Image (cartoon, rainbow, N blue to C red):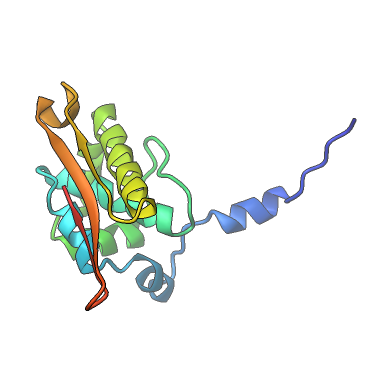
Length: 151
């Protein structure tokens, strides 16, 4: 049986393209306090920027950061400025494949915590986060509608 594509290649390109207009960049990639709390827990500036880029692309256009993918200069500078790092630190992020995998792991754990309504996940696996215990969770304060991520 012959298969046909439900969505055209042109549609996919438009749907997964990162914006380059300043207004669109600000609209989709402005970080909030919860984002900054998570990002600032990363030790190296390159890891902060890499995690920021990974989070940004998952939000819009809703796809993961590809291995070695560098965002358009305007987006990269906008994100770097928000976390106080040099946009050129992204090069160091891709030097170690483990950095990208760790960012993806952190994001997945955050999503799991969010989907399980504030459950906390504790990982005690050797080699993860330097061999130490790594805890990540999501809390939601219903009084002031404040959400927090802790690692």
